[in-house]
Image 1 (cartoon, one colour):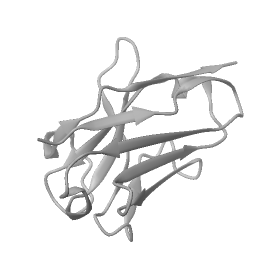
Image 2 (spheres, helix red, strand yellow):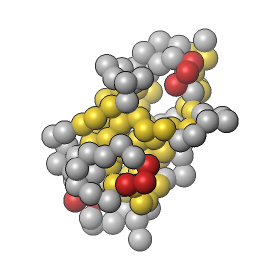
Image 3 (cartoon, rainbow, N blue to C red):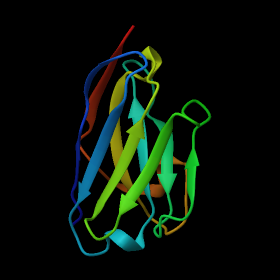
Image 4 (cartoon, helix red, strand yellow):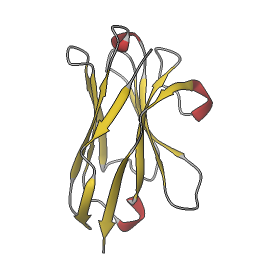
Amino acid sequence: QVQLVESGGGLVQAGGSLRLSCAASGRTFSTYAMGWFRQAPGKEREFVAAIRWSGDSTYYADSVKGRFTISRDNAKNTVYLQMNSLKPEDTAVYYCARAQTIAVVTSILHYDYWGQGTQVTVSS
């Protein structure tokens, strides 16, 4: 059983920064790609960023490219999402998820384990 626990969310003013963390249990963390998704009220969950198992390949949604950075520390079983230049439209619950593959994937259908989510609120 894999458990994912997100942390680091909160309230921040537009233009500010937050760093989300996702701690994973289980010894197979390093053999899977990981991703971040978000869901705003009344909207579907959407892809934000993903990282290959080795950390040497990443992919971002156009809406966050250049502002967000995904990274991972396999020794700590943790994946991070550094969010800079935050905008009010970034307000959402952010979820980390484990992919079913080692490669970067963007479809929600390719992720099998999910965290409980952490709220990010950006005020204008």
